Image (cartoon, rainbow, N blue to C red; front, side, top):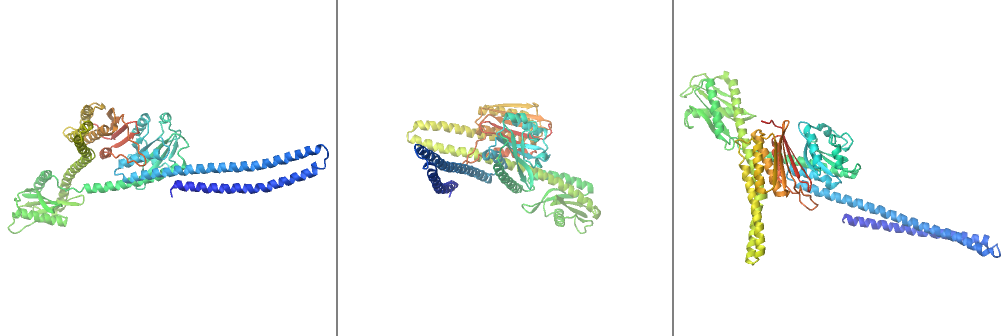
Length: 629
């Protein structure tokens, strides 16, 4: 049985009980009337009848008037009380019905948001849902998600419904620095505009202009620690109600669980993505091996040596550098080096033969395992034509040198591995973009082409002409997607540090290709930073402008780049439609571009925030604490 049917049945039961009460009033009225009739008879008998003459009728009339009026008054009073009681009961039932209906709708909305959270595949989507929820579940006017960073400062991750003036002032307050410990240890979680709250401090005039009078903070916990808060802003001091706060607390617990689950999935995905062979760039490792081998041979006055690396993927040994060992395993010098490298690898300690007898070229030899981060990478082999050139006294020194060589080789591997992971991420990003953009567009173009073909066969030339015009628009959109992807791939690493110059060129080209007027400002005009940071900021700007072209329906956009103390601040805004609202039966729009932008910013130690509201455009802010070159 649905809750509406249950409430109707509940209401009918109460109305039936009310009719029972009215019947009780009716049976109570009978003895009252009987009592009044008796009093009337006694008065007539004892007062009117003893009086004779002309006064007797008048006295009877007077008695009848008094007793009749009293009887009518009592009867009408009973009826009025019953009617008032019924109206009161009906009003209470109606209030209870409306309250239960409101709670039912709130629970439906909470359930719908919970389903969206469960289906979310990124932290950005979860944060967007967390920001929207207070407006959907309660009478909140605006909301934000604020996180605590490792420097004990507040960071604005996302905002919804705040005005540009208030949002800019709040961002500036956080850039100056708000101690996150006040919010991390706050137990009140509810503040009026005139109270001592770090989120209201210095912003009271702007809050009054926006009609904000109070706020409520909902804690988000990760690993049993408060990591961030959802802040809901309200126009009235008596909102939200206790029922709303209980509902929001349930929601914050759901968000905390979703973020912990997403964090676990990201760690699992990261560990899977990190399974990359350790020797991707043999040339780089061979060059390094040759350098360290020459140093080791000179230091020990040896005549030969080699650096052997063990390949885990193929479970084979590879000699990346050698001197005077021959070229094949058939050479007894190479065979000795490989054999001693294997022994050192197995023993995890240096193996030294100070005096070698027989027909061997070498009279003394040593092999030391290359160990870094608790992992054996291979072994270093040294051979001398003189006995006891390499002896047991050299064990500790040889182990130390081998460890330093191992660290150098490991760093080379990690650097190459980092490049491989970056390439994989770019490939993953491109696959997402092509799947969500180009692939779907081409599929739709194919469908349109089939429809046009059918229209031509059916001689529907006018309709076919309209479809051809639409086809041309979609082809232009597909071309823009491919063009932007190619432009992104053409951002080279030769001089990417000239961030302002490259960003100015890209925004000019974006205006020319899309027709969306894009204003670019920078201070200083020649802002330059490290290449690895510049590349990521350029990518963020590119993806942000791509989202504006595809989804914002904007006429103007601005890209602002500036240096604020030790931070680079990148702000992209548009005058478009903002993020669309979602109803109970609608899906939340998922933008992989926003997710990638957040990951890029956080990957270089920066913060990323999105502020939007339907019809108010979108503002993306990236703050990166790096040294300006």
